[in-house]
Length: 503
Image (cartoon, rainbow, N blue to C red; front, side, top):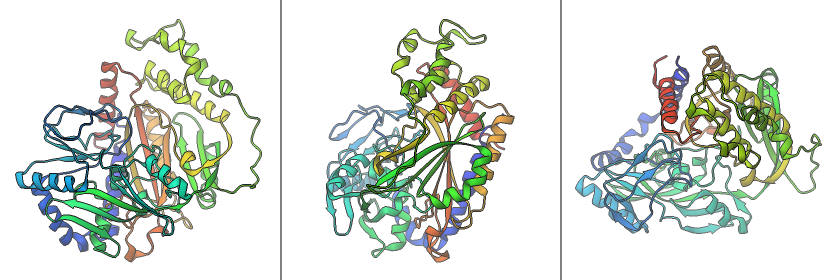
């Protein structure tokens, strides 16, 4: 059975579509002038960063003494050469030296990416020591930072100035270089991916040295390099457009699939932030909206507040039902450890889900039971919550996992094409008809377009304002909820089958 083959096909077509919209050939000559030198010297790639990149941090240059593992521990590497520049001048010297000697390097932030593309056994360059907050311009509402500064670090530096970033992905431990270079996104049909926040940047290249890029200074290369995936050079410094600090009122509710279809256009048009969490093998869709809140605004009435014990009961009851039992067909490797049962009452919802999935992660019937418990958990968590945007827009995305995300156009906010919901209907039908062990949730978010030519949500300015376009982002995950190497290998084998097989 092939789980996500059609998903991968759509990812390819969406990416190609983005390049066609951006009319890339018009920009290629100048870009290739930079790439020619880069290709001769080295290839770089930013991992989507997170705090859990396991590395030994030292200053300077080291030979084969550090092992890196990404956040999900799906890839490990011991590079022959590791560079950790502390200043932009150090960075320029490293890149120039690698260019002169033909040394290949890849750039790593904090190592969130499950694909390991930031890793190379030949050479790596870490930006962790390039983490200065250079300046905050309150009048222009802009902040200038080095590429290794982390999102949370930047947010805290902006807070005394009553400023914040326009949008966030789920994790705030990303470095700003990786956060922007891969075209990360938050949620909101009228809000662009985060690369659109970049108003200027310093890019260290092997062929042309350190380049200052902006809309006014070399705009063509600027729009190519904002989402450069590391292949145009090493981002050293960024200036980002901020917004005033603000609170949001967040509403979490569970709808049926039919209700989502009926209300989707209204949900897109009336909410600043919107995300869906689809739960395979259930008729439940978790709908999370967020809108501006001002002190004194009336907060709609919520259901009677549930205790945490009541909210987590569906997960706990499913775990307790297995206590002292061995389900038929479950191998000794998959029995519940005694310490799991001892700690049940101290686990969060996502931790409980991990422990439940670990019992038999490749049995679709068992995964369906866990998904059904999760649906009930979300129903008990319905209600309103208010708080600062940087806090509410981040969320717990669970434990270690494989991830595949696609992005594709779906009309405009005024006239949605329906491609986003059709995509999800097709995907869920394929999963459930083939009895595939797909855990919850499959997350769906939206952004408007980006003028960055290599963004998955690329929309060319000459075709109209990029913010007129609507793009949907769908992320599928397969959890790695266990440290058992045989079980992790079996999950990875199934993931590879589903994501690399032809339709």
